[in-house]
Image 1 (cartoon, rainbow, N blue to C red):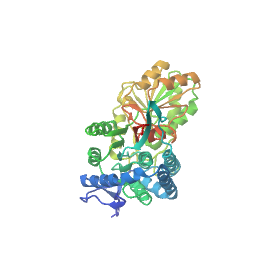
Image 2 (cartoon, helix red, strand yellow):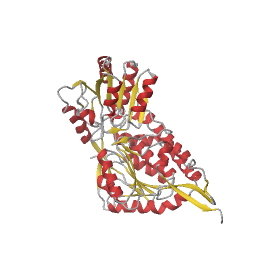
Image 3 (cartoon, helix red, strand yellow):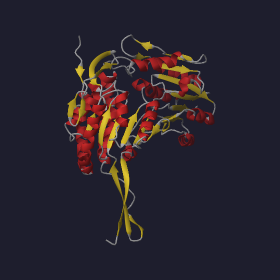
Image 4 (cartoon, rainbow, N blue to C red):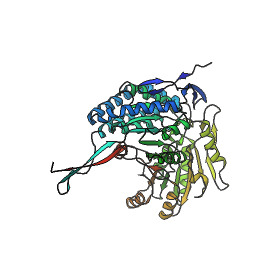
Length: 478
């Protein structure tokens, strides 16, 4: 029998089992086999983590921005020094290709921590002055307090960074819960940060939806941040409203990829293939809903179909694969269900099936012939399935692009600068890429509108979300 590794919560600087001893199995999605157990944390564990964060908050809040910056820079250095451990944990978590995890996740993580280390010293406010005779006003920008954070399973390491880095830089303390299917890399991050930060500043508890619900309902947090499904976000917002907690939501997407007749088709196909299938399409910004002008539709579909057929999925140590498995059996079932329920007018150009009998792999898939109200157009698949629709003119392209409930990201492919500017103005999405799709940088905000949520990750805007503004007015008469 295989001995399972034991993962633990990290509360107040110490590794801990769940108070009642409950655990859950953690499965490697590339093999379908359990490799570890993690705590199934309950109310007592949530209480302990929140108490630790609350006790640590005053001292962490009162450290100077320069001091907090030094801590974050040490964290970034530690991530670089222990990169191979982080990669190994994330690959076991997710089944992702090892090489791509090394090149596409570690460098951005390190860069993002360093960006927020700098942001700690760039607090902004309106100019102080006398706006009423005899009185001086100025603005204080302060941390909000304890932050309860829930990270998703598609990018466990990177999303943990997106959560804790701005929160800590702004002077908050954190209780972070990873997904119950991907706790390993977050637990390792907690171990790394535990050797750097004061006890209680950063806490990690493992568990399921009930654990997350207990975190949101707990009276200690001043703010709740979640990256997850629309349903989860709505539940969090409703629960948090009962005691008026601040809420930060990133809830998924259905990114339109608008390809006009003058676009470089070869360039567009190459970019869309990479941005649609990367991470098995398990990305809220994935380029999986393509709208193509009718005059180039057939040529585009033929080229995309060939590119998809040439794309491979497989084991983490296979250097020739673009993506690994879906994260869990439920996700595999969800993706397969969308394809199985396709209407009669849809056509599967390639793929549309599971790959292998071991693990949760799904073939790169292209579906054409779809209509705007089809289920697969309106709902997030979150898998390696690219749909293609045709449009007749710019107005129809915008109608189709904006005609979903999500509004996180989008892209436009054209050589016409004026058209690109019109589209970027009229696309109702938090990000618009032009002749590219999916790159993100620490300096620019990431976040959506409509049912994709509210609040920003990354950038100075993401940092500001973890602060509150106080007006101070003083009499000049002494």
